[in-house]
Structures are given as C-alpha cells and as structure tokens.
Image (tube, rainbow, N blue to C red; front, top):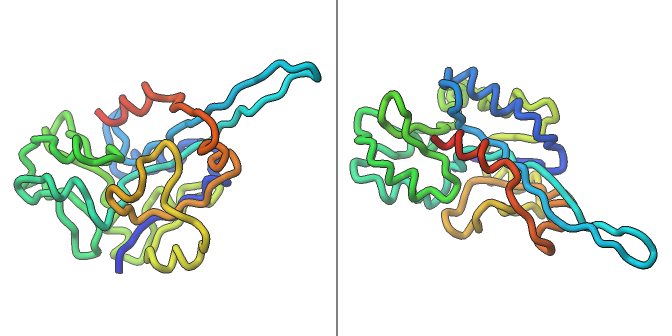
Length: 209
C-alpha cells in the first residue's frame, strides 16, 4: 500500500504554515526545512494599440519527499541507509549513513540534505510515527486551506481523478514515479504554455543546506 501526498495547487496561498509546522514538530535548526514552498511566476505584459495586455501568472508549490516508487536516493546510497520503513515511507537510517551526499545529488526533488551538525543525511520521513498511530503528517493537519492530503496513493488518485503528478517547476514524474497527486491551478496549466521562473531561489537554496 504505497502512501503519498495530494497537493491542491488551486488552494495553496504560499503561507508557509506547512513549512513552519514541520520545522516545529521535527525541531529543525534555523534554515533547515523538510517541506519547502516554491514560488513560481512568469508571463509578460504587452503594450498594444488597444491598451495593455498581460499573460502574467504566479502560484506556489508545496513540496517535500515524495516517497517515490523508484527513489533515486535509495538507488545511489552505498550503505543502504536510505530505505523504506515498515510503512513503505522512504527514511534514513542515521546509524548507517556516512554523509556522502549521494542521495542529495541524485534526488530530483532535493528532498534529502546533509544535516550540518550530524554530518548525516536527513529528510521528510512522512511523520512515520504519526502515520503509524493513524494520524496525518504534521504539514497536512497544519495547512489552513486544506491544500494537502495524505494516504494510500491509489485512493488519492481515485478521489482526485484527472489529476497527475506533474507541476512546473518540478521535474517530470517519469524520473522517479513520485507518490504525489497534484491538482493544477489555471496558472499552473498556463505555465506549460509560457515561460516561467522560480522567484525564491535564495530561500530554497538556504533550506537545502
């Protein structure tokens, strides 16, 4: 029973409550995040004979580890520290991790990163202890707009028929087959037709260590 996340891009306002709840629950040091919010925007404004027209858009993408069906981090880990736990969630065994950062380099979602204090890899584990107790990951319960859901990925896909696993600027889902379902907003649909860019690169880079 693969577990995963549903993200409703139509509802997300980029408030970062999911980030803050995760930081607080996991007691992360300042600057570290297991869930990140990407601000993506694009389009242009044009001056025409009949006035100004615009194709500008902006939206937010909340992303953490996607506990992929084909996780790149597990494939490259030389010590098998990156593994699936008893719930099928991708986790790190810190006793086995040697801090080589191969997982960090391999993951297209930049989910694992090296903890600067422990010198070991760390990442979102899906709040496995909460899930084992029948609860949601902390980020899901914290979202004020209910933009996140968690559960059996097949049930999530059935409940949100017509939704895929792709949204810009995330990499194509064919790379790792993430357990992620995304409902695209009109802006995110438009992004595939127009150029766009990540507008909070420095914030994300700092979170990735």
